[in-house]
Image (cartoon, rainbow over the protein chains, first blue to last red):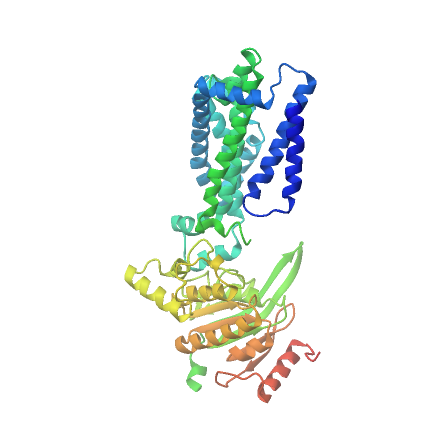
Length: 274
Length: 256
């Protein structure tokens, strides 16, 4: 406890000392020090409360090492990522073309948009019983739930992106006689792409939230299941918190990966100078 | 001169009227516009903002339909846009997702590869963008983007080019350069140009004929013919008189 108190004030002092420093390193030093201070507070409060159930940061760390040593973590990470990738890829493969058509074709929009708007607000969690009914307890249900939770943001985002294509670009396409598939390939798709990528990014974030919940309720593997399992197997909250932090870390990595799509020359125009 | 006057007009507006609904109320934008444009003529449509000059251009380009009257090009009624007649937009109509090269090649999709490459390179050279073939529009200045747009139009060797305040977003120096460039290209190729502007000086520097539109509803308030050769020095007394007449037609007192 004394140690955490010392650490807490030491990091505050370090933050104060470095307040005039600039440069790239500060982008890591400052958040690192803040994390250190928060970790010290966490440790301090756990010590003050005298709880036996809630872990300190160091107990969480050893819990993390225990998960690694038991070769437990890797399998669950892969299970969660597997479901998310398949559900997400399927949703993008259907949602993007559908959104392109709905955005361009007023009649199709009129026909399908009400149904999409009705289904969209239903939480994917509410689909869990049906997913289990149809696919059983396993990857199929997980993939289906991720598909549902990403399909709507991708489709709706793509539709909106197409409907927002500027009149000037539509008229340019008309003027140069573009039609049919060529119109989609040369104008509609590239014009909508920056916003499509934004909706993919949002959808992937949603998918990562949903998979954990789905695995907690209706699956026998994955990071969500691991959390439930750790609690049920003797209230191992050190493993629960360690898994939560792993989920957060993987979420950051997924977002960093999908953000790479925003860097291509073909889409950069959509983010910088609007 | 007489042969030009007896030749059939390239573009003919016959009693063109157009109204829009604005919050449910009809708004007469154009009223009974009659105008003939000769082949190879450079005509400026000059008028205050909101006078319907852009609407008139959208109608002749085939993007909008008149409520009354009709527009013919080469004797045929305009039914929609065509690659023979290219529109140069006020804001940038070029595609920001495509390179300069791909933008200029847009209208040449169906040509053989070598011919396409030759024309694209020639056109890019003509508008002074050599070396920027692989650049994307966001890497270019406003003036360079407008050159890409002009090049995209020129590449298909159109009969008619419609320009809707194409240099309006540029700084005044770039605008001057662009004007002399467009005159240089027009003198080489002699396509018909319909050029919308609200800038009196710009119209005097560019046009063979200036068609002044009145404030809404847009009617033709008067026509000023300028038959002096380019380059034109706006400081001369003759242009001063033309300018006075144009401001008179516009109903504006221009001395401030």
